[in-house]
Image 1 (cartoon, rainbow, N blue to C red):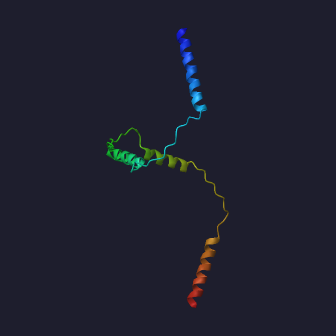
Image 2: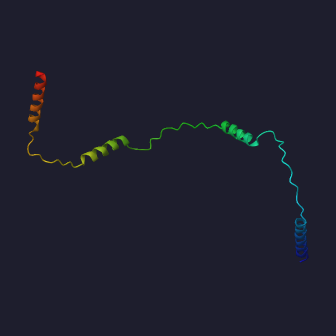
Image 3: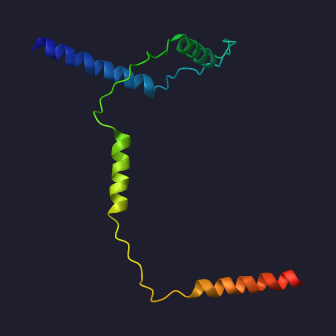
Length: 118
């Protein structure tokens, strides 16, 4: 109990003294900035980090080929494309009679003969 009382009394006394100092207007004087470091520490730090990064060995070990796919993907792709193409249902309109080929040939021959005469 004595220790608790002593520590509480010391705490209250320290608090009162600190309040009195601030109440009395005790302030630290602001010192002027002295530029006594003639170099940029930030730039030096970046340069050192850059040089350390360049010293690291980033070479990767060549890995061996692992044939973990037990089937031919090329064959399966071609088979799938063939199956999709064959499974399509194509429907065309039925035409009764096609008579445009002889007429077209006659028109072309007539035009050629006409230009050949001129």
